[in-house]
Image 1 (cartoon, rainbow, N blue to C red):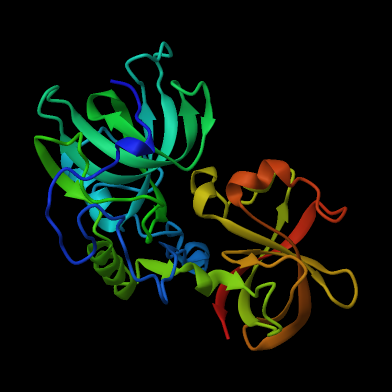
Image 2 (cartoon, rainbow, N blue to C red; image 1 turned 180 degrees about the vertical axis):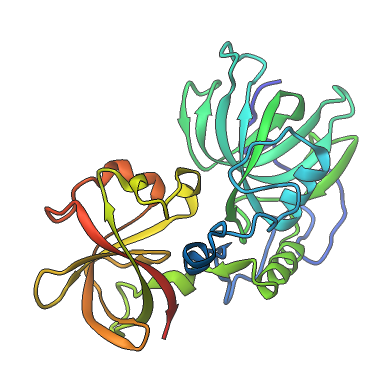
Length: 315
């Protein structure tokens, strides 16, 4: 079995429950919905030599560590809205090592005729053998026997992709799990209340549409960030790249350059910055990116070396 397109993602039962109606797309009230990610405590890492995130956000599914496919782990991923990277080798793929696909797993079930266990996923990015190209944001079907490994990326999804329906006509024998976004929201709220994840808004500095100048508190690491060799600074670990937020700032008056770990600024917007209780000035964001993009940001505004701070909080 290969990959299947979105037109196969349809109902095959007459059930209805809270979030959806028979024959209709899943409807979910998205008012006041926040985007969540793992809570990153850079200050604790510096002071106590701790990991930047709680390794047990999702038990048995550590961030950025591949594990073998497991039914219960995939059910957990669906119930908590986890973005998963799978290493997948399709039936027609001649590449023995498999190919990485980043997906939002939506439905897990079994086909009565083939007895294949299947995952219906919203394919965010990755190589498609059937399309012979990189594909993004399209429905795909994956045989679990072909999933060589699965990995929690540290990211969460909280809204249904376009066209999502909770039943799948190919899962004719049984459906083991399907994304109910009311359940996902409750599970993510539990993680939020436990301090394991945080709203992305908490670490976003300003927006293009707002005239408000945010005020933030940061802590000095007493070290520098060399964009050409970022991992020479022991605070940074390559394994944390996907959850490492970097904002490069230049003082409004003068040419003082700093880097802030743990927050994403809006390019061109000004932020008032305090180091503890001491105001160090107004700074403008000149670049913001994730650790995965260090390779594309070796020189910014003619600079390679930035004084390194870590984000504490908005004030």
